[in-house]
Structure formats: C-alpha cells, structure tokens
Length: 525
Image 1: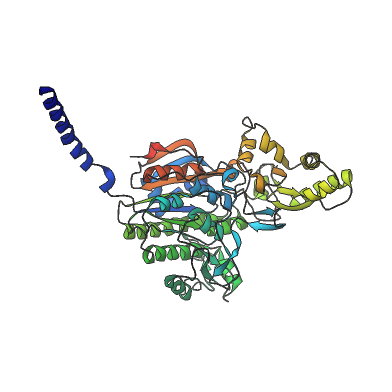
Image 2: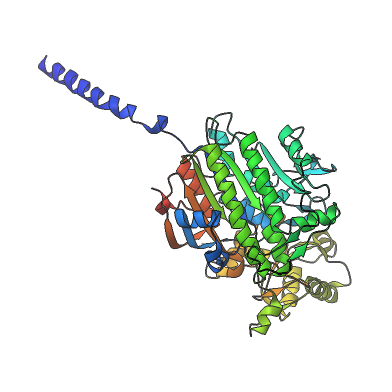
C-alpha cells in the first residue's frame, strides 16, 4: 500500500512540475512576422568599404546594427544574375537547382530558353505576350518552405526590375512576382500567379512613378555648384526613356516605391505566420555594365541606394512593427574592372570575342571530321555540340569534345577548359576552380565545354561584365539584421548559400530541399 502511495505522490509531483513547463513553451511566444530578403544586383563587397564614409541610410543601419560578414562568396559558376538569385533563398547550387545561367540552349526544343521563360503562361500587364514562371527552378525556396508549413494566409511576394530577379528568390508557391516591362513602362506579372493584376498594381502603373523623370538631370548627390550631370534622361516617353531611367538611381527609387505599396496593400507582416518579401535592385547592374566599378556614377548610385534602403527599412518597420522582422542583404555577383583602366595601371587585362572561341571549335572539328556546323547554341562560354550530327557521322562524343577543348586551350586569353565528362566523373576537390565549375554543372541542361577566360579578360567590345569564378565576381556582402540577430563583424568565410538554411533555422522551418549551405549559428542571439 505504501509503495502505491509513494508512486502516486511521485506522479503528482511530476505532473505539477510538467504543468508550468508546458505553459512556458514557445508556441505562444511572438514570432518573426516578416522576412525581407534584399539583393543589390552587381554590388561588389568592396562597395561597402570604399564608400562607407558616405553611407548614412539603410546600408549604414544594416552595417552598424546587423551581423556583417566580410568574407562571403558566391560558391558556384557562373556568377550571373539568375544563378545568384536562385542560390539566394534556395541555399542551393546550379548542380542541384538547375538554374545554370541567365539563358541556355535547350536540347529538347532546339532553342534558347531563359531561366524563367514559360510559354504556357501569359504576361499580365504591359503589351502582353508570353509570361514567365519558376518552372525551371528545381526544389524549394525559403518562402516555399514557410508556405508549406505555415497558415493559409502566409504571403510571399517577389519584386524587381528583372523577371528572373523577382521570380527565382520568391519560389514556386509565391503569391506573386512583379517586374518592370521596359516596353510599356509598367510593372507586370504572369498568369502563373493570378488571372489579373491586383487593383493596387494597376493603380501604381497609372501613376507617374515611371514617367516623372522625363528630361531629368541625374546630378551627383554631392555635386558642387556648376557641376555637370552624369546623364540627362530622354524627354520623350517610350522604350528608350525607360531603359535609361532604370540605369539611373531613379530605377531603384521607383522599385522601392513599388515595394512599399506591396508591403501596405498586401498587409505583409500582419498575417498569422511569417510573410516574405524579396526585393532585387537591378539599376546598379544595368549601370555597372556600362561604366565599370571605378566610375564616379557607380559611387553615386551606391550612395543613393543606401538612402533608398533607408526608406525601405522605415516602411518595413512601420508595417511589421519594431522587433517583428528580419532583413538579409546580399548581392548576386560582383563585376570586373574596365580592362583598359587596368592596363593603364600595369595589370594584365584585355578583351576577346566569344565568336573567336566558337570559330576555333568549328575549325578544329571541321578539319578533323569534315565541314559542318558543329555548335548548336551556348550558355555563357559553354558550347553545345550537335550530338545528332556526331552520331550520324559515327563520331564519339568524348573525342569531339576533347578536340574542341584542345583548340580552345590554345587561345592565349583562356585560363581553363573543362569538359562535361570531367565535371561529371572526376574528383576535382584539389582544384578550387574546378570545384566551382562542378557546382554549376547540371547534366540535363549542361553544354559540352566549360570555358574560363584569364582574370580581367572580357568577352565584350565595351563596358564590363561578370560571370567568372574569380573573387572580383564572387565576393559580395552578406548582412543579417533584426529579430534574433546578434550584431557584429564576422570575418569567417561563408557562402551566399548559407543564407537560406540560416533563416530557416531562425524561423524554425525546414531548410529548402536542395540546400547545401550551413546554419550560421554564430549570429543567433
């Protein structure tokens, strides 16, 4: 009897201890209401340090009160917009998520496709035509995982001036993605998401947001009296005006205003679960390609981006409430300096023609196997050989690829050439460049050769570009800010692919399905 009494007392004591523990469980605790994921297109890491003294808005706030990583890199090839935006919130790489470039040759259809082209959809807004969607993206994004596990009113929206930059970070289950159509001067979407544009988007398009800068003079932000403008925008509205407008700070201002409307009209940060807003500022890239990273216009663009970000952060806080949101900022890639400027300083650099590369391949194959058109298409500097033609001539694919590779390796401006066989089957762990190339290899969409030019060499006649595995293209800022983030400077080497699993851990949801990144636990409070 005493034994059973003791068991009853012990059970009662355990129950009394268990009750307050259950009451203290975090299920009733406040949650992060909004994630704002920001990419500044073509924003090199050193833009944070070179122009630091002039920042006093959003970049200043994020840098000083956020977790700022100084050695973050895109850990894949190629370093282009679609690939960087896909990696951002998938935590993945092209070898897994299938986004191998901005565009590539599709062997199934025999034509070039873009990372987001989708003939099964139609454009909403603008002048109509084919739409875009995330159908080529394999696997989930952070927003997808939040929607899978979250309440039905969870909302995910992506906005940018570029379609791929709005669509890929937002993911498959997003409520909407919006981008700017340069033909019509309107923000548009796709029937993938909805049957018609929301009233607030239609109202924004009818406002003067895109048109107000006709004939405007883009003056330096710290212009002295009598200073000349960087540019004067066309006075006549139309495609030329819209193209020039979005290459100026006015493009980022317009996008920020649109993002603010999305915050307010879609009630982001006010739903039952965690909402997501992805914002990609494209104007920095559109300008940077023309003038290069050392031009005074780029400095001015960065300073004005800092101020636009300050406005966006204030809007986020007003909608979601202080302490209820998390912001992450990064870039999709860097950019190479203008080669002519480098040579003035004694650096080896130059330009070449991608056409010359393809002619070398065609010539080598024609000399060995007979005259024919051997290259069907390309993805960046990756040619797609005609496999059917090779089979018809009873030529082994590996022999043809090796012949083409040897021809390209003889060109003086070429650094490395990898074949699809190497990337698929060889262990390249001891080759840092080869490892990045393997991360960019997705068999079903890949070309036959993967060509890397010498550092600071560009396949363009003017301006500059990006896409290489070198640090000027891979090194980007990464900053976390807001709820649950431990502020400070972090000098450890990380990858942009670490962002998504880190946010997933902070929010208590599954990491995206293809994530290869690690959780940056060091920033958690």
